[in-house]
Length: 549
Image (cartoon, rainbow, N blue to C red; front, side, top):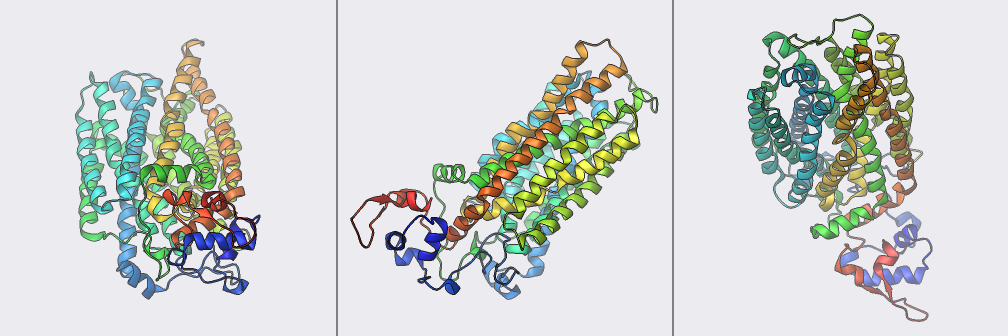
């Protein structure tokens, strides 16, 4: 234990670390003396969270198939089936979210609204989602996660179906229903990654998370494609909103029949360690706020959300305006059906770049992690910083060549997508199991509050404001949206800086989470007031929190 203490707080003496051990107590610590460096546990040992392997062997040590079966009570095949169900629901989640973007020009014509009101559709949904996420995060750390998801998805399916029957004079009702859709998505997004964390560890967890987060770009792309194609086949954009509710009913049935609740944090404990007990919500929040890796990676992910939220809603409309200015397609006039080719092409690009980017990010991080324990945040930073110039070039070239625009969008979105699975993995290994749903919830709140909750509306607002100063024309509509979208490149660069900051703290925060999961560090709360008394020298009163936290 002394070795652990010195690793975390190198400024302490052996006697002070021994005092920490005595203050924690043998029953609480359950650690043998680690004077021999070979006896010292290292990140990546069986049951420890995160994906960092044993530096001595170069490979992660994880429980074998029988060990996972015994701990979770589930066979490897059943665990993989649970992940498949969660992936299906995640795909459906994003498919529904971006179906609206696929038919946005038609919605603007139907309700006779401008760019700022169009941006409000996404903003209302994200705001509701953001407000409800902490509620489901709190519930997800304390109650049965399977039933919480079943109820939320059933409600979401019902509300989405209802939103397809709103008359043209009731635009406010469309905003209301899109806000209520956030209930279902909050119930799922805050909980599903924690189920995966309780089924797998180390590289197994990273692989399953990468599969899970493949569903984000694929579902987003399918939303554009399904929305535009269903509209073309049915001749009415309302039918695009009636596809996902039926698939949502299937999702509820699969959840109920297939998913089983694994014990929280069991795969990350030694066999002789007691289960971690949930602490109060206030203690959870305070611990998360003191975790710099969690805070900075969440800020970096906020930049990802800002950029993807803006592009998700506005990229098809921007590409349509670009083609109108270039004379390649007729303008979208009142009473006419708007061209859906750009939604289809952008949807395909989103699918391809998402799969490529997520896979590329996970594989690069996995290889670099063997020699650099800070690989995860560094790969995220490289992805964001690299995407910014390509997104800028895609906007700058739109007036001259739509082909060049598509090429730069492809490269920029590929680099941007490298973050999805890695950010989720960072959260899971720097936060202890009993706080993960809460951490997921507050990462969602932060990323949406400063990210995609306001970015679509902000982009539309800037566009409308610029158009007021220019003579009405198709060119002015194009230029206004072009200039407003350039804000995304700047925000992406800021996000890259946040991930560089995460790299400074990632090793220490990961190790603290590992020790908490093993019961080798005291929980935050009343125990923070315990006093450390050195075994020799002048007696002093030092709070444990000042030594360990």
